Amino acid sequence: MGIIFFFAQIFGSTVYLLGLVDAIVDSFGEDGGNFGRFLPEHGHWKNLYGSCILLLMLFVVLIGAEMFAKTNIVIFAIVAVTLIINIVNFIIQKPIYDLHPPSDNIILNKTVNLSYTGWSRETFLENRGQNYTTDYTTKRLTSFESVFAVLFTGFTGVFAGSNMSGDLKNASKSIPFGTVLSCIVSYVIYIALSITIAFTSSRLLLQSDYLFLEHICKVPGITTVGTFSVTFSASLGAFIGASRILEALALDDILGSLLVVVKKVDQDEAIHG
Image 1 (cartoon, one colour):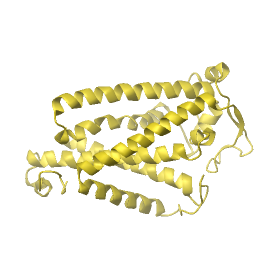
Image 2 (tube, rainbow, N blue to C red):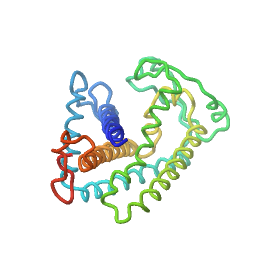
Image 3 (cartoon, one colour):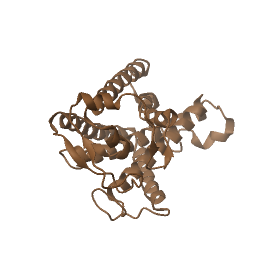
Image 4 (tube, helix red, strand yellow):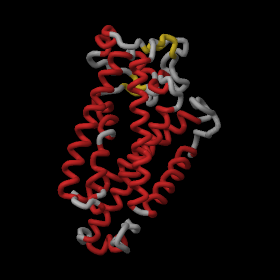
């Protein structure tokens, strides 16, 4: 199970990292950045951006768990502020009927108007039930499986506490309590946002602009900053979690001499891991 968990963390970290790179390109890419158009995005440029972010994460991990904890506190504050601002925005934002598809949506005509209706029973009734359409980013028909694959990765952060169990004073008590609490809080937030969006945003808007929260928010850029923060935190958490799991596998001699170079070299960090 440890080996499976290790690869799950590695692949999870990669998925979050790719999400962060996509968010950066969507914001500053030369073909259609929302806030600036100066970053090249063709060829291997995205790989370069991802590699630079990965080196930054490695730097944080090598400094130590204390640095990771401090980084997460800052990120938590940013995400909390972003979430609160977006919730308030749903309450105070007036209807907007002249939103347009993003530049990378070549499926929908750019002259089509997308609607943020504000709180509306008709909008909620329109959004009930499934209606899978073509994903404008992949040009493929969506399905329950593809939507679930996106949603599932958003919940794997609940394992962050178990990844850091060696740094907890009372791991046997803190891990179950923290995991259950994080599941409850995540569930409440997801359900609340889902219901709020269903009541306020037309189906065509949801299907045609995945960054619509940024476009309807009264505070420009705040949603994008929150996206950067949460994807970086998730990728960093999975990254450092994978190193801890690999260290544990080495200490237990699960794979014999294969992991001898991964064994702990000091009392604080699994640097080789």
